[in-house]
Image (cartoon, rainbow, N blue to C red; front, side, top):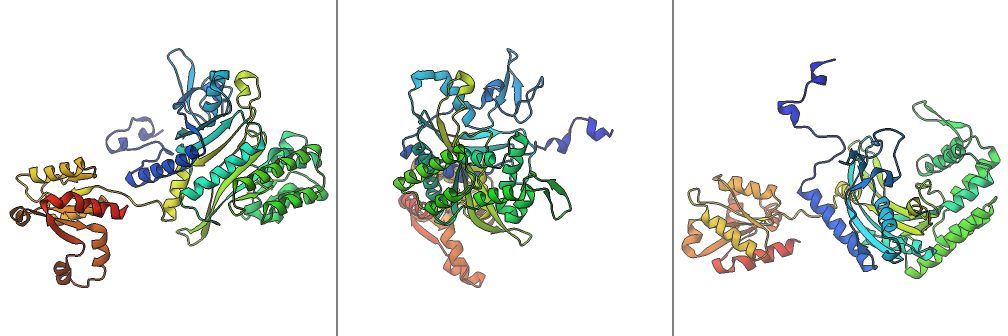
Amino acid sequence: MSDKATSPASGKDLARKPRGFPDKREGLIQAQARLVETVTGVYRQWGFEALDTGAFEYADSLGKFLPDADRPNAGVFAIQDDDEQWMSLRYDLTAPLARFVAEQGQGLGRPFRRYAAGPVWRNEKPGPGRFREFWQCDADTVGAPGFHADAEMIAMGAEALRAIGMKPGEFVIRVNTRRLLNGVLDSVGAESPAARLAILRALDKLDRLGASGVADLLGVGRKDESGDFTKGAGLGAEEVKRVLAFAEAGAATRAVTLANLARAAGFTEEGKAGLAELEAIALALEALGAPEDDVRIDPSVVRGLEYYTGPVFEAELLREVTGEDGKTYRIGSIGGGGRYDDLVARFTGETVPATGFSIGISRLAAALAILGEGGKLNGPVVVLNLDKDNPGLALGLAAELRRAGLRAEAYMGGASMKAQMKYADRRSSPAVVIVGGDEVAKGTVTIKDLEIGALKAKAISSNEAYREARPGQIEVPRGGMVEAVRRIVEAQV
């Protein structure tokens, strides 16, 4: 074994971090904060209240990912408390909610409508776009059994996505129900958990592989482009045809999709009950004014069926982006949810109806950044320090701007004016304030609007013309500095 593998890190080797825990700079932090503010604003408008349950839960209360081992650290990050009980960082915002509801009991009042936003942690292998720490923003209703509660979650999720700037046709929330899927699985004789899981995994690949590829996976199996063979679910030709007819029943409108599903062959009583669920949700969505383009009934959605007990929904961005390889990619899933009536029962033995919707804030922020829509970075106004021996003037002006409620800083150091301007550009400053000897003598300040200046500078062909025009630059009396800067800053928001 090499020394590098056994020796502790030293020097530059110490400057490393665990994989899957991204460093975030100002731009991403601001983008995530704007998303959280917008989404939770919609949740609050719909009558939900905030709840923060904290980062740690006892490992046995989370009830997921936990192996039969002395250290429960598969899937979660766990540490031992001083009383030797295992605590884990939360892996989502729903399991802690179930614990909270069970702990509060009947005194909480039902239905209980809460929203939460914050980081969650998963001890899983990281990869491109897949982190061990990421932010979610959830809303849940606990204690409401009707399908109108599911429809409300779906319609509210669509409104939240519109609120952050998604236009019609740029996203969709797809809706299905576990009972409908169970009915189809029963109708083709899939009794064992392994057989049912194989069928569901095949259906989940419909968008990527198409009907032909899914048919292979439902039957004997499929060989991919690399030559690898995936064993199929082992259904016969008629059963494959029945499952595909169900999966491809989706249409342009919810009414047509429901009609297609009603004609699908082989429904059991469970399947008929699932169809009735979707019909009730569709009626409620119409009453809530949820547009057809925003919300579709899609029988191919198989989201997390080991977790959900009824309707399931998945939010997907339809916008496409061109990668560095020149290929076009769809960003895909950025959230979802469903009904989970059994979660509180883990603690109390009582079945408590619950439904929720979650938006992946970190994934959404990354997607918007890829699309070039992460939002403008709002940097501070920079007061240039042109007196190396006495920075007091610059410090005082920056303090005056801050007292007026403006974000501002004085440049620290004695760099050249050109270097200080470059610094302001790197900080995404909306403006700089310049006070040199001439300004002091006249009792004025010079303010340069960096955004307008950059736009006007593009049309100037020579350095001489640039110096003559001084694009985006104004001189105002010293007493008018604050309002002049405020106008520039507010115009750039």
